[in-house]
Image (cartoon, rainbow, N blue to C red):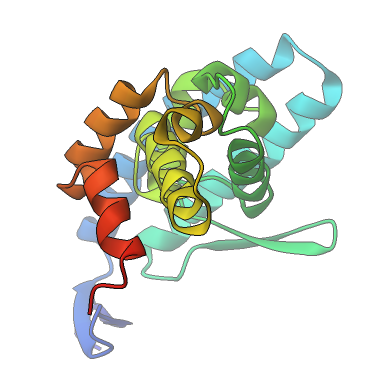
Length: 202
């Protein structure tokens, strides 16, 4: 078909796409970006245990396959890992996303580091940070702050616990810290936000 192939665009309409030089250049750019990250991750994993190394090799294979298939306009690499089908497009694998989010939610009141979360996902810190943002839409620290604020909002609506105590239980240094971040993310101060919703406005 004139040396071109049909692919499906974002709006579901068919569009023409060159299948020769453009496709090859796209693959090359993707691989030049991904391969150094894979090498860094594998080097880090090899200093740990065998199972971590195996997992990283599986992840690397998925990433490379994803790059090739994405360049061809497909939906991404779909691989079988145990009993789970995994779709990997540069972010965290589903098991990693579940483990990391579950750990964050279970430890909102504790001090959490990117290094600890990366170890949980069995990835290097730099690779984890990029994959995390790709999966959740925010860098790890901003995601953590947002989850703490959501927990604080829930506590404010469901209890009469003082804001100072809520701040500590949700991982903030003190009430002032909670108030500062709450104002930045919501545009309101915690006390004002709580009062408006507890008074049955509307």
